[in-house]
Length: 225
Image 1 (cartoon, rainbow, N blue to C red):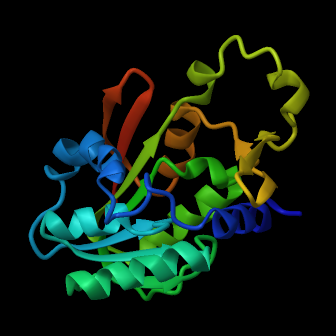
Image 2 (image 1 turned 180 degrees about the vertical axis):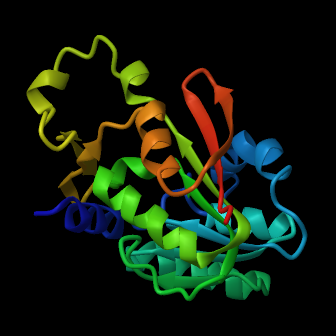
């Protein structure tokens, strides 16, 4: 099973968790963590794309900051919940089912794209493909924000890592157990800040890196002609 299929199956089985539900206060911690940083980049009326939006907590947060926000995800169950939340809130947020590897958007559709700490589901090739797409989809001087853990820092000293790590692909085997539903494959790619920077910068120049927490970084790239 590909990582795409495994992740899609896992997130559809997981459904909507209190920590990902925009209507549950327990999900607010994730938005609070980045709000001060994102609010400096999001301008009123900016067209923003939430890549891998799940149930839309960052999509709605960007709308609250003044953006015209769209979320895209490949998991139908959380996306359905996002649409229900939007209807209840009378939100203008739009939610699309789709694959990051083949975004369904035209040239100059957005001014900002956010990849909020879910880069681990993307292979190195997929992140580069996404960046190439964003070069067309983003407006001139549009920005691509990548929020990332550095796996080298995170997993230093992890004894089981060599057994689960595929040296040729960078994929780390893993699994998650969902109560009353079973155990699902949850593979993850080994990313470092330096490698993400190297791949994206081949197509979009880096504007800034901010360290948000001890091992949480925000990389901002700009679509300059």
